[in-house]
Image 1 (cartoon, rainbow, N blue to C red):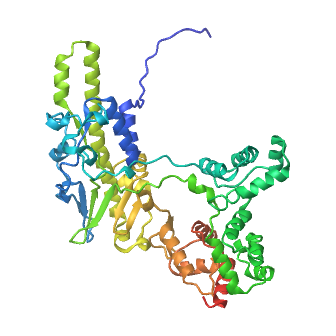
Image 2: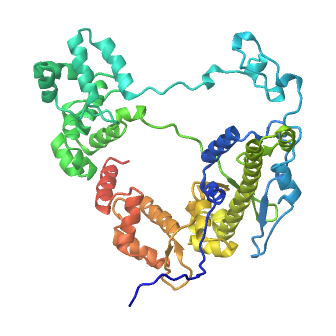
Image 3: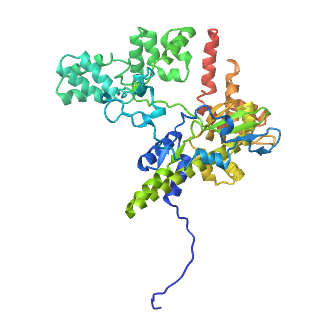
Length: 510
């Protein structure tokens, strides 16, 4: 057969995602901090975007000004309340025709003074107390750089050792510290590398082990705890023996520990309690990140008629303005095609940003509303009434794709009458009912297991098999390995270890 060239026409469909569409999808899964950073970047690169000042209308907005959805508990009829903003209200929130963004205000360009530099200017009505000269400014608001473990240790080395050789040895020892403050090197290798006697290195190590926080430069957990106990003058022979047998303490083998330490049950429990108060990772305080407070994206509150009102948290809603007046003014004076093209692109991106933020807020509200409708029992009665729920159920109910619901529920939080929970918390696996009825939520089953363990007595500690039988009597069909998995996830010891601990406590009357 001869090879010949032919022309063929074919029709095919393909999904082409524009950069703006991809960015819109990313906006859905952004956390609040990530969204703020993204908006700041857009403001820096786009001269037509301006952040709205919330100080002017702070406290003026009523709850009805926020997007909200109300649910009637007595039926499945969910309806939009008057709190849901109209199209005009949403347009006002993301206003694209604010002509007074750069309003002429006397204080807007007033220089504070040469003492602060030429770049410091007043912010008009939004001026801070520092700019206006009031006493409300606090220099403690300016965060200082966090001290690292190495910097903390180096400072103590400087004040502890006078001779340069000892300082050099101590610096080498500090280089071998891990994030927890443990020494992971070998003193013999350090002595050989520096050309000194190992005895000298051990002497410097002994002095380094007196640094604060106590427990630094320990070689293992037992030595770390021993250093802290010695600093408290509590490292007696009995305590030394207990620290040397930490695996027995972890297994709650109190009978063996009593023989080794030569103490009774009451003293042994006191010693174990004292060990629990020690810090097993003394250096971790210098590496731990700053814990940011959780700001809920959605607020749920009870209505007077027994229904639930779901609304977005107005404090987390970004407010962005597009200055059309500035765009028109600059465009009229622009002659070059490249500059006009740049302004047009900036206006398109600004309008796209406002629409994307609007759509993001509506999507979050829609998903949260369906979650509250599905988990109405949890809102009213607690975790025992948490229903099994998956992403597909919510996606089908609100006519969205499952991936969209997954992005919306990622790193978003809801404030409920039961506390603040991540939206993912409400999606739990289903555990079959022993009676063939409605399935049970895995979170509700875990709560039931914890309640059974907390209520057990020293002479009647429940095994995993016994817990399985009790749950089956309550209508929960669950396997023993599943109970063991849930117990381990909740850091609950085995029945053997719990029995030893409870019997020891009962022996001393605790």
